[in-house]
Amino acid sequence: MTISVTQLNNYIRGLIEMDGVLNDLSVCGEVTNVKRSYNGWYFSLKDEESAVNCFCYANATEPVTGAMAVAEGQLNYFARTGSLSFFVRKLTSTSDKGEAYRKFVELRDKLVKEGLFDEARKKTVPHSVRKLGVVTSETGAVIHDIENVALRRQPFTEIFLYPVKVQGEHADIEIAQGIDYFAGSDVEAVIVGRGGGSNEDLSAFNSEIVVRALARCPKPTVSAVGHGVDFTLSDFAADKRAVTPSEAAEFVTLDVARERVRITAHLDKIGNAVLSLITQNYQDVQNDCRILHGVVGRRLDKLQADLKYSLREAERAFSDKTEKYAAALDKLTDRLASLNPANILKRGFGYVTSEGKVVNSVAQLDVGGEITVNLSDGKVEAKVTRKEAK
Image 1 (cartoon, rainbow, N blue to C red):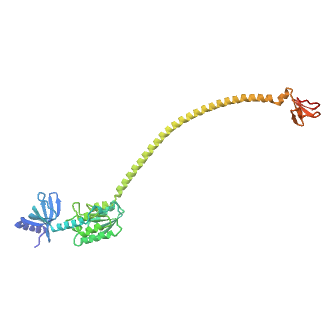
Image 2: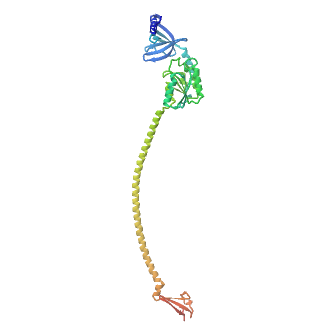
């Protein structure tokens, strides 16, 4: 007999709805994979070997990851999707914690005591790196998100992928190896990440070897595991936590276009400030020049007036001196004229020379000697016939 998928799913749903046990039962297990929805919670109950998907409305007790709980309700089969879910009417938490949660807490406390989560040991993540290492799956959306964001913001970024499994057996070993690989490379920062998922999906990033690899990595590290509501031990060990892989890419790159706009605006602001300062200084210089011109003009006018006055006074003093010296000169001239031998001779006086020498004493002459008598209009040769001293 051949039937359609819809017929098969409707048959299975009918079997479940007619089974009284499946319509009213209690299931005990560890709460995990808790996700809040607008009208309630999705979560899983698991034991050592298997798990079942559950849903409860918001008016029920809120499921807590890692807690042991008893869920009372009925099993629902959704014919359209062929999926099975346990609809929980009542959820009762027990005092016991799940084994996985207990191990998680023990590891967390151990690493805290060792100081692996201390803020003081964390390195500063650079705002712009040229070489970026990424540890994630090569097939997931994480690497594409990082490449798209990083290259859009900072086109010169070189991105190096170390492909790893991000869940499943030995995923934590591969992740730790990827971190150690980049620790010895020339990349400037390392992003470790994966997309969202259940607690089991993210468990590799709660592994001790991954946490220790992040803690010892000499390169700045960014953890981008899951979504904003997801936290792993890797988030606390990394130097910085990003809510999403895209945000991790933003942490280590500059938005070149935005920086260009910002720098251009800053330069325009500086240019306008300089231009304003130059204009203001030019106006100040003009005002100072006008003031200086007025001061200098008035000073020059005063100096010119003082100079003219001094010249007039000097001219007057020089004129007075000249007149005084002219009068004195006239007196000296008159005196010299009166003493001039020529003028004396004109008044009937004369002088005697003998042998070319002026005779001014009788003793210079001898009787019989020849003398010359000099008059105003000539000279007379004579001979001494007699001399008489006074």
